[in-house]
Image 1 (cartoon, rainbow, N blue to C red):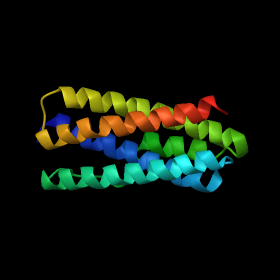
Image 2: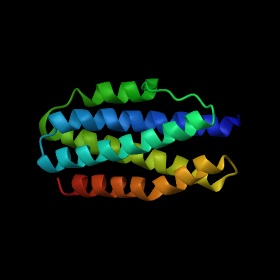
Image 3: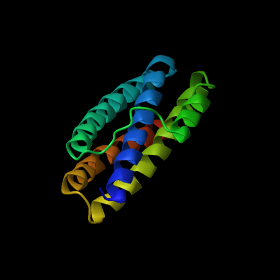
Length: 143
């Protein structure tokens, strides 16, 4: 199995795991209803993407980790320290940062030679991730 394919599955599954967990926390703790609604949409979208990626990975005999990596665990713990409007700001900032990182990774993988199923997944996810990042940016700008 090419290392690039393993790295892709690891990176995107870790990003989605973090996004889902942060969004679930935000659904409960966000001060703004608009942020809670964004968090619910984001959690649903990333859970769908994660299920799809898991199905592809398992069909290719690639391992799929359901746990947060060290980076994700650290970011989730840091987010949970905030309350009120500060929580909303931090959540949106982290979402924008994570979406930007994931977008760059998806674009890079989609443009290189690799497994066609994973490349198609990467290409298909680009628009959804970009829309999530723009929505988070709009919410952050309007705070």
